[in-house]
Length: 397
Image (cartoon, rainbow, N blue to C red; front, side, top):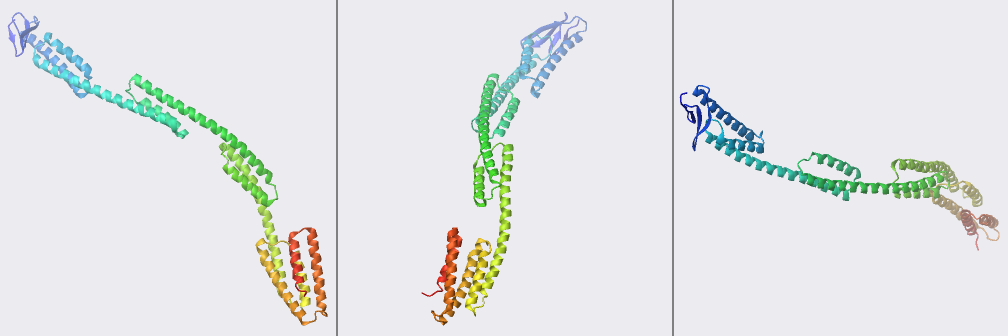
């Protein structure tokens, strides 16, 4: 076999293959199969394969497709094999590339460790924030539905947070679970108290309904109206019962009130219509009294007396009209009394037969007063007394 050489190695006549290194030549194998060029080329391809493997490791690490720890491990294995590798090529360059690759992998591993630590710290902070939020809800929130919904949402958010170490995660979960349980107990206590309060409210409002229904048929319009208004005030100040119970009781309570007030309105409307007719009748009588012919005062007095009796016989009128009507009647009475006084002054007191009639009229008025007093009717007494005083004033002392 002829001796064959290249830039990085050679094959001697015995077929031994050498590679050139910084420390001198090193035998890497032998080639006995024939042509020396083919033998040297084989070991050069072995070097090319090694170089390709290093390139692949470097490219995958640079692109992020390769794991830094695995890359470092493979690079160190290759680097350790260089002193005995059976290949012909620039092993010093491969050595330098592998040292650089190992250094780069170390840096990547450090960066990844820092990133993992940062991600773990961020994830831990998120779960700590969720646990703290749950504790705040457990301690203070009274928005029961919204708070319950939020606690359920926290569970979903919690599951999406990854990277917290097991020990820390377990401790944070215990905090959250304890807060959730505390909220559940506080909410349960609230609704238990609310149920008790609503039951008491139901009993109270059932009593109010019973009272309202008992009053709904009353015809004591004023006192019953005041009593129903008082019941309404008590209803408004009482706590609310369960919604369905509250609505049902309110319908009964309102129906009882409506029944009474509708009947009262109907009665008052009829009364108002009747009093309107009475008012018109009294006004017609007053017009007659105001138009009495005073040319014969005695006749006018008799006619006025008849008009007064008709006036008194008419029923009730609206309260606001009473004073006005009485003023008009007093004016008519004064008109007649003034005419009588004038007539009386024209004649002799001793011989005036009209005086006798005045006294007779006074006696009638006094008898009417006595009857009113016997009946015990204050309104009639007052009216009869006024008539007595008026007739007495016409008789001279």
